[in-house]
Image (cartoon, rainbow, N blue to C red; front, side, top):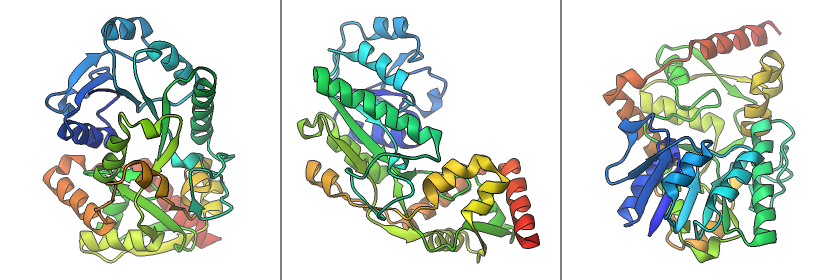
Length: 329
């Protein structure tokens, strides 16, 4: 079975590449080759920018894939381009969308695949919705064999999920330094974080899966934690006690509007995902990495790669400014 990942070296796609290889898939990556050090062994790389359509056509001439997974599609134009590029070249086209596309504010904290898609706070989410609409129309009109997958907050080695960045070490370093950290709201809203290796089980189970054609799935953990609990688990793994300050998301967004999408359009909402649909399509899908275990793995990985403990100084300054303004108010 041949599978093509457009991208393939990112946080989630790297884990899915490893899982697909272990399942015996012949894996191809189509990317610019700028992260060659992250390439897994046995992967065939087709080196091209996906927007260079002539080169992509040349590299894929004569090839047919059982599944193509688009990891780096963000606009409706990206979808229209891919439909033209891969029509007749694959038995399945999987688009990686986003669970942030689900209705905000939520009418119910229980999210299913039939939850409406509308997010007035975040352009990123609205663009993902537009992508889904293009694919849904192509499936209805011509039978383009699409599958939509919506990840939520997914983390892997070296990633520590926080409301102010997950791939950086800013918030954990503040904990280690004994500084105050911000938890938006009252810290009691529910949030779901999923380890990449667990997400990969669901994604790989959808590859070449006839039950997935024309369908949308989210793939998340069943573990829902409060934001206070998430921060306390991180702090415990670091061996410290967190100094939590609760600040309303509206207040944060009023000071720094760039957080409107990330907070009001996503993380300030309680979300608990009903994973019945992915479990029905992939019967052996189960998330086996609780957050308390996964975050310790991330911290252990960072201890072995200290150069990856990147602190975002601009974010640090914003956090200090928010704390100062809130105390003054």
